[in-house]
Image 1 (tube, rainbow, N blue to C red):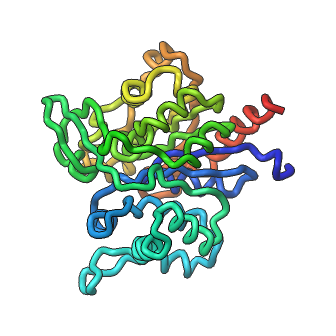
Image 2 (spheres, rainbow, N blue to C red):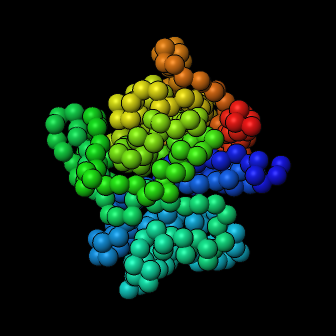
Image 3 (cartoon, one colour):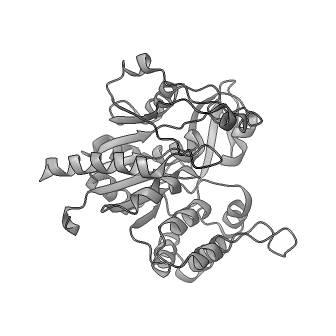
Length: 325
């Protein structure tokens, strides 16, 4: 396929789910853009963010490492985290590199571009915002919790999440990527603290409502304690709808095969269970539903199968691209 015929795929997300998605997509002939959350406030990321007043670099770092076309040793160096016995306990080299480049350029997005170029990233990496933002959650008892890392700790039902400052604007490149895409993929991940933290930025929400691109949500396989306790697939969809409105998500991809007892036993201590696929309830929504075995059985922990997902998404993207030809 010629380069100009490659479908344009935009992936929104953060956390551990997004790099898994990207591993498969990067091997396919697509024009790939990623829009990454910068609301994280824990660990090395949180410390750098607070001390330097920059967007959180951690999720950006993981995406750079995933898409980098450099030797494995250099990727490992970028991801290396200093031990507690050092003078930089918990800090990763990549976070420090991004912080240093931010100091050099005076602009976080430019820092991301420069580091991406150094690591020969094939694709675009956009922080959702060029400024520091704080994520808040309103719980079902009316309590307001501030800070991404503090929200799951309360282990209560989340009614809604919101950002400060309320006037935060996405990068123009983010809006342009959404408007110009063939498909937009909402990656699996922490529903409220990684996924919705991206989608509720006002300019992003408006672009998702206006874009002609197909918007695809890859649903989580497991629930997450403190965020999605006992959530079904429809509960995930309803959380998205309540924050960004109806008629934004067009397609949902769900796992439809049983998970082994051995694998599930590893999640008992985390109070994590499989997300129930409530097919009948889901069919009441005006959504395209794609059922597939999207679990990677080769992994010790429950992870999405990046190759299977990439194949599904690529076929969807090509179909959308062909509509415009």
